[in-house]
Length: 213
Image 1 (cartoon, rainbow, N blue to C red):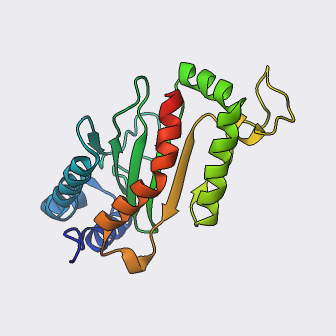
Image 2: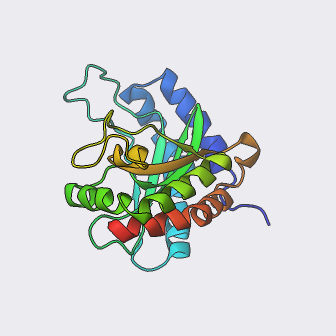
């Protein structure tokens, strides 16, 4: 069975490539109907479908194309990517999210918590100091072996009171945790399938993060 969103990635990348070359309000206004029909409408349906898969309590977000240029030297008015996310139920304080992004030079899927809130960060570090830390590290090692990528820790040093040579120093130096995979072009015609597969792969990590969030 073909993916009902098979055209989303090719059409979005074509639009965003043209936008990158014509990043101006006049161009976008003239192309707005195309944006609405080829990007926004199918992306909204994709958000709804995946939210239905995940279950009650899931919330969704489609990021706006407009850039906030008030404090930026770059005054181009539009983002040249299409980003969306699903926040998963099950976290009392800070939700875990599933991410999907399309741009002219990448198509990425991932999940986790981009930045821990202060109380969640404290509980994350306390948990990582115990057996939980080894469990999470084992998961991350497995994801790397499967081709997922994980960014470098945000901190150069382990924050006190934890030892600088702590066995889970990598995790203690993190202020958030997200795992990503790049979608190969052979799968561009199956974004729904890719999202379902990615969510299933990351479910063990989501459950670990929900223990502290």
